[in-house]
Length: 289
Image 1: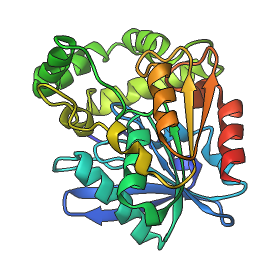
Image 2: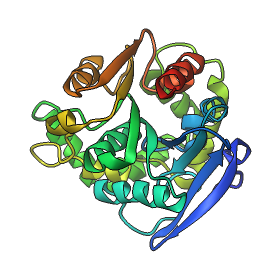
Image 3: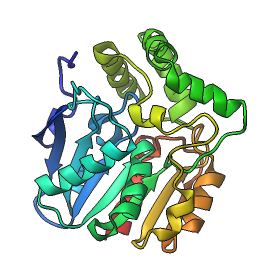
Image 4: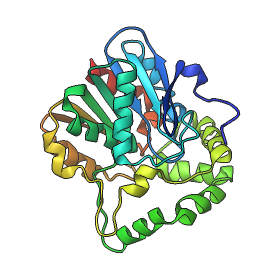
């Protein structure tokens, strides 16, 4: 079911890209400067939740393109699997649609992993990468790994149960405080309201990319052995209190990239882009400049 109100409608012009499985929605803003493609995270994320505070700031100096991944935001419905390989092809589809030969990629979590992966697979099309708390660089101890694999394989655990739990706004607020943020957020209630509305409209759960990235014994998507292949400049931004991506892992990832810079934001959680937007937007803008 589509949301009755489009929370990203005020952020720019909405463009539809027809695909065999459905329609991709991209928000565009800004008429001058180098192009930047923003890639959101997984689960109940979308253009508005990830990039509400970033799009206006970056559009002052860049042509900004923000993508709703399949099964998120305005890219609903989507009749098909959106796994790692399909998501990489989607990035190419967006670049081709807007005739962008080279672009800066800015990605959060799942989007950060796909930005790094795209720079590995398509170096000729990537000018720079900013990865905020990127996924795709993690591994888990035995037993924990198998429990995560089982969750990924069970629709009841990764979709039905979470959709039921997060129908409660209080549960969404608890998750935001514990899982997404490390400290106070000036628009916390607005974020929770939007997150909760998204759950009520379409349910909650992990993405196809998340579910497909984990195998029974090891991660199927593990970028670490290939990070040294990235040839463009990379900025990794990490919150020191991130509950999902340990700072030690993202720092090690930055160390593996030949031309990488690492910024640790003290006290911030997984969504540092919404928790400390002025600081994060400034870091991104300076890096892209």
